[in-house]
Length: 236
Image (cartoon, rainbow, N blue to C red):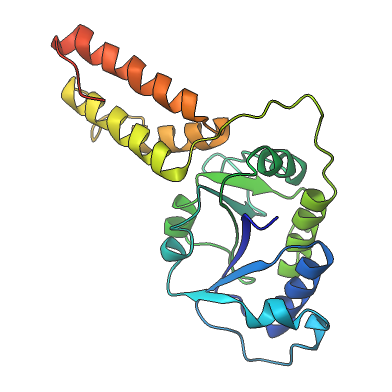
């Protein structure tokens, strides 16, 4: 799955990176990105026979830059709750990714110590929760990656799945921007509204895995709303 990039945010231990490299090789994944620097706390012997992936790791100064070319981004977390809503479990991620084979996907894993910051998490429209013992839910970083890649590798696509053309990030951003402009134009005070509409639509589009047709239809719908209220088109 050359369209999938595994993204590690500031990993702390060389052993985890090496183990992830090896499991990526086991399940035929090749793209590994690291936000920050390579850990230097120990050897990388766990990456045996997988040195080609280790040598090709890409490094980025921030998560925002690491995901800039990704059409869909999914963050993985052991935390869930009222403010940390769960969109998927690993098997659903596999289904989602296999239906989006023409899109660039980013799978984001946080630090071993405390995961992702709120700002980093906000960059990832979708969140996946790996179910585990509620009294001890924290998986090792390499174990978390293994669970997810196993689901992706072992996924058997249903024969009745339609071959949709899913919207690229640029299409989604364009649709999102158009809707925000319409809301502003018709007098919705987004700063005072109890709903964060910008985040709402980002999450909605990602969860729905927007197709190009859906993106076009949404723009047409909001343009008609603008015509009804303001009397003129908002220029698609």
